[in-house]
Image 1 (cartoon, one colour):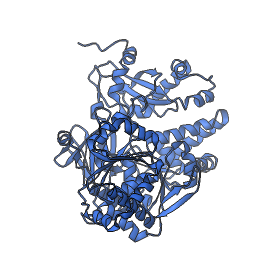
Image 2 (cartoon, rainbow, N blue to C red):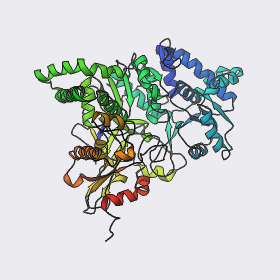
Image 3 (tube, rainbow, N blue to C red):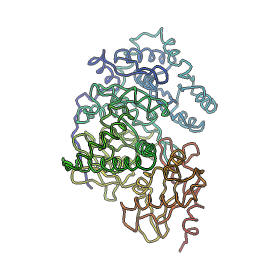
Image 4 (tube, one colour):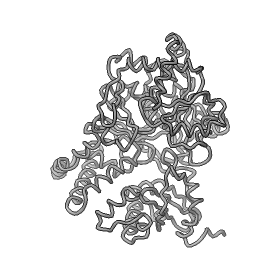
Length: 604
């Protein structure tokens, strides 16, 4: 087995908890801003100091005690990303309670499962719509004692309830929290079966965040740095960023509605961003479409090429040629500055995870002045386990082992992870826990490889390996990610199990389609019409060919089938973390796969 380890930099006692992290921030930077809260749509950002935040945490914590919350009780939170969620997280931790996130798009059945499996005693939702979903599920949830809505003054209600509770009781509860106590239970969105409750401890968070701020990543999350959180706080990565911001001294803002994101970025001016690759793809594609047609489009594509070439020239400490440097200065004045302003104008770094970004986008963004630090992690590892560093970036990889983390590659290519950030187990599910935690290693189910410098490259998922009729093993992720980079492509599912060649099911992006059609001199058409249009199909064939450049001929996509139904969370084909439910797609669109191959699998 291959193995690599990054040094452990931890500088706090093994007894440290998230409560101690907040206390440390208050003692060191109590009078300085920890958060900024926006007043109204497009309004100004008002700072909240570390001391003010801790006082608010204690006030809400007193209200939780008055509500009958005991140490170890679980509290479900269902909301968009907003300041109150983070406040509730820290208030729960202050009294030894366990916050359990629920995606704000979850159905009543999903709410019922998570609340039931976690034994939630209190549910805090954002609005009346969420409350009605919980009400539908509550008839089968006898343990729930109360449901409060943030938009119906849940925070004020809790603060008033706690007025008679002595602050000393909160301090006593906080001090009693052990670093091995569960800090949160996050239910994996799972592409198959019921979500499993991943139990993460206080020490998981402390170990990961303290190691991060003591490493060269402090250039990203140091005091004075700022980030605007718009990823769902139901996702482990966003929760990790909340804690690491408190740990590292940076300032955190929240943007609950991505429709207002561009305006929020412009006013908040983050120095680093956090997003999944699809966001970076959308920004690039939108900028290309905005360029329009003709000369302006040619200028955009020329400038994008210059950015990519310049970034490639920087690899290994290199320098671009004089001619390329001159072109870069021109392209920067014409395009790059405007794109950076779209992202707030102050961002130097971005952190990307959840899926491979792709080398083209990685080089493009670094070329325009926004260095994307691609990383890798899972819910079970409390977020990052590998990440590219500001001092050494290898675009196309997810970086070296995160500080304090060991990475391994098993004989069959599976990525293994070891470290104090690895979860303690799935709630009430020792069988599934035993399957993935073996001999101190967490078996991720992902496939990858390590280069000579210990940098990790993701190649696919073990469960998604396609075996063609000719016996060729194909990992579909690389092809799917490259194909999905086309502006009008929404989702791609590569198929070919027991088939003579590789094919792909493709869905179109209804938001990007109109602009793309216009820029290519094509008339307006529906998704259904576009799915049969020769010019659209020819463009998708070219996109497939570009994806094929990364693989051998035996692994390449030979035919595509364009579907008129996109895969979304609403219709059940995407998880809340935007992963395709492959098994469900293969089942429900078996007819389309059969059309692709001219009939069903021919069993021998």
